[in-house]
Image 1 (cartoon, chains in turn orange, blue):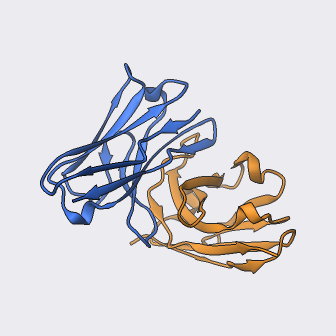
Image 2 (image 1 turned 180 degrees about the vertical axis):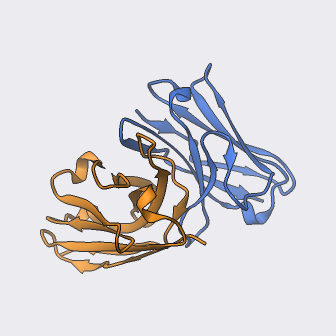
Length: 123
Length: 109
């Protein structure tokens, strides 16, 4: 059974940083693209970032480019999202998602979702 | 590109409902479309991937299709039950960028 467990959420002030983690199990982590998706409570889903199976390619939504960094540790089956210069608009639930299997060239077909972790940004 | 869905749809138990998703630019058939279900207070789950493929454990009452003439995708749910009440999101991608529709609230009344 695929399991994705997010951690690292919390409450911060604008301009501060947080690092989210996702521990994966139940599948061959190093074979899959991985993605972060977020959702403001009561609103729709928004793609945030994706990383290729070997970490060689990353993609970001424009609104987080230059502030967020997605990374992975295939030896530890873990995915990370370093979030710097956080804004009020970044407050949301963040979901870790198992995406497509390599060597597919593009991410964007989600198969499994974590339970999510809440990030709150307020002064 | 954008994906446009109706804000809400409703139907009675046992009936069939169709949720459309229209792509604003680019060919709907050029990239796979996925559908996700999100029940209140829960994380999303995958219902349909790669246009028409049901995710494991999803009942056969759920189906989907692509219509290139209208540049749209559709999710069809037949034999509606109250368990189907949820938000449904379509999603696609292109060149690394991934896009969700705004979501459709399905009410079974």
